[in-house]
Length: 466
Image (cartoon, rainbow, N blue to C red; front, top):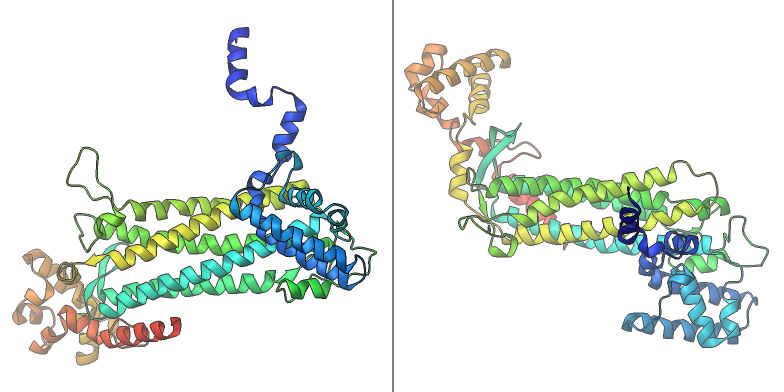
């Protein structure tokens, strides 16, 4: 490469670091661009810490009052967009502390007594994840309500049930939607478990070994809504299991949303046309005027990669770290923030699409009867009425399916004589089980697709969700 091309490359890619190593260090070391998201949690933690210091006589009550007022003023500044964030101060903790000292003087310098940025960030991050869990749990519940509401409306509307994306047996549209309610319920359970485990307070662990000051960690834990203080100071500052568990729950839930999004994409396609989405959740084509692309569902499907990637990224960051804190842990937040945002947006989009979609129940019903979907009902009739062993009934049904396929009719299109050619004891009663409605109506076992089951389950969920 020529000197000229080297200069061009430096201008394109290295210009921002032209000042040399100091510029590079500032760029790689600063986290304020993303950890400013923690400002509410940082102020909450500082208020609790200052109150505890005053209660223990480590700082004066006068200093605590000045600190409290100063932090309230800083919160107002940040809320209004007037706070002077400085990259030179590296992170949200130093930015707030420097501004506090600037506003209130010496009292601001006393706030950091008996704590470190290590336990401070561990506390802030737990508070942020806990807040995110509460918001996401509410969104999961909202999507469940939307699904259960639509399930109640369509408890008796048949659609094809699939395995291998091949027509298997008829189910109802309501039953299918309630399957996704069950998945989301498990997602909420994982979040609840994560919240319970993370609800211990690291504040007071200091840098890694605790502090020689006579602090009251139980007081700060209670003030911040934690169940208890963390029991080991080394673990308190270096644990990121709570973030990993949050991301694992997010990744599983995003996968569930992606599966449903894929179904929406399929159902909207021309060969299926099971549902229609309005313009609110579709886009057109720049050259094909007939197109209605389910872009919202496709983007939900895609965002799963970002959420799963955040989990893998943080696992990789943490896997080689000895105790206690290392600066590697600065890389713990961006992925969590991004994943939480992607998950929240996906949940909002899915709830919107569920409420927006218009099912074509006639088309679903027609598809539910195609592909010999009632073959299992025929086999069950042979077992129940003629007492054939199931394997023999399976073979008889397979021969009847082949006969119907050769004639280009469904099973109900065969004549009684044709059926009796394969099994002489078959009677005309067999035709009573070969309709789609009879098929779904017969599945009365617990968890089955019978309309009365689905209606009752939808009511149960709507009552439970409030």
